[in-house]
Length: 305
Length: 311
Ligand SMILES: [Zn+2]
Ligand SMILES: [Zn+2]
Ligand SMILES: [Zn+2]
Ligand SMILES: [Zn+2]
Ligand SMILES: [Zn+2]
Ligand SMILES: [Zn+2]
Ligand SMILES: [Zn+2]
Ligand SMILES: [Zn+2]
Image (spheres, rainbow over the protein chains, first blue to last red):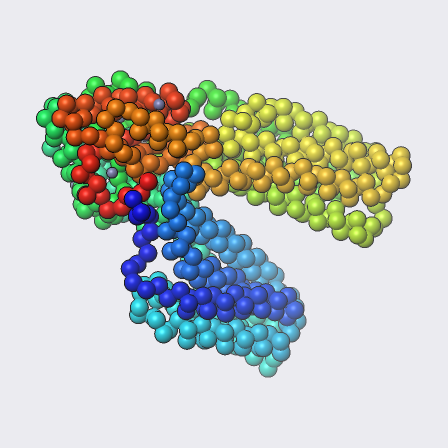
């Protein structure tokens, strides 16, 4: 019974590497927000927002496994599995808000570009780049070790590119006085981030709305169930996704009366669970099937397809 | 989907859903009217204060419209993509309203504090403005009375109610503060009024958000005692163990329950599992007000086929 909903990949999780990268990234995030305020640079602001995604991503990589393996309790019968999804929604919302702000502000600035303290901007850009390279170095050591770490690595590489763009705009500004460079770079970084953010937003909302997991066709599942021996009808078929790795399904399955007398019922149950675990693109290991004789319907006040 | 009209998630009172919709509709009509009056008044008199209050009303109106749209979407029948129906949408509307309320209250509080620290020349609103504030007060009061009846029926209605409640407080404190300043000359009254509004709104909004997050995180509904349910199940004849007990809510009051119940081999041998199921379902709906339950009755050896078990 000690098992739980942890689906963390097997093998060593390089917690220490991730923790160091997180400390570095969080520090750059703080520095960049400060820098955006004192230099007035939009590019630095959006880069800081991007950095926040990485702070979030690395934090999740660090705590998700631990949090998700916390045992379920009477207060949380699903444990903390959903926390990840809600946190992702929060992060996407913040990122989208900053992105919109940068676009509105950026377009205004194209018409009336304010002065940017380019000297300081170069310094902050370089700090960001150096710190990013440092996190790459830390994470690269275990890059191929597991999928989690690889994703974290890619995220940080992505970020280093943002810092390079900030430095280029700062150099352009200090050489030519072309202040619009800052807004242009900011909007470019924004344009790269926003589609990803919208996708994340869509995915998290759909999980929170208890939508059927992507890739699972409930009609198909119903057809499979009805095709099994002894099955007469299906109702209250529900599928949703508690968290990324935890799709769940439940259904009421009406079977032949005699299954309850001749001891076939447990075999039908095995068939059902094997079906949802193996026959569909989304493998559902967490299933609950209520086998009922047709006469049970009178005890159910509200039934639906 | 011919039977979807009698779907279990419709065990809520459809009549009350319709009432809530008309409550919201009327509240929107009132708030929108006041908003238009304020905008016209602001343009005619050039009053910035009036325009600011109109801005407030607009945020109110948005909150109410979001709530209304949510009730309409929530009434849609379940589909294959959304097998639990759309009632969760109302929880999102409550989330939106909770965040909006906190945002507005925080803004008001910051303004209030900054005016306490650096008291600039407080402008006492002239009589016409007081009259407009009084109209706002009456309108908000009417909307509040309309919504009060539904406030406890769902998180969404509670959010809408709080939205109007915040605005009512706003109009009331503007009037009281102006009168205090008018008669006693106690200038900080205005800033203190802002802080009072924030102090009354923020705890209510936070408590709404806490309930919203509980639903979104699929935590056990507050009134449900899982340990108690477990002991009822274990007390049924033939039951040996129970695992994978899950209780959550699509939206407040629409609880979904599922569990795996391990029984003695004799239960299957005697052909009693159908009757046990009847007893379990009735136990849950009678003793715990959970209408939507799924019990998987399994023999002890079934556990070997299951990948992950938990209490
Ligand atoms: Zn699992
Ligand atoms: Zn159902
Ligand atoms: Zn049933
Ligand atoms: Zn199958
Ligand atoms: Zn319904
Ligand atoms: Zn479970
Ligand atoms: Zn089981
Ligand atoms: Zn009972």
